[in-house]
Image (cartoon, rainbow, N blue to C red; front, side):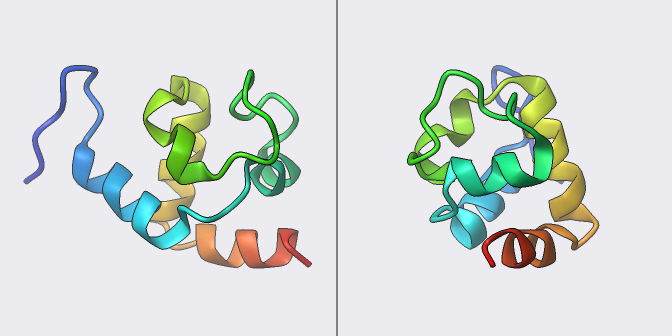
Length: 80
């Protein structure tokens, strides 16, 4: 079982997402989750660079799709 960090984020999930999808641009993820995803960060930033600073809404969206196995497919389609 993973332990929550100081901000209640489970580091193993964030690490898995970053490892698998860290090179994904925020701009690509905005195609999936809307313009409010990772608000305040340029679309040219990589997910790995901003993952730990994401607000709860953006992080929850990523985690849900990652845990259900849909994130990789969604990123691939959005990158086309």
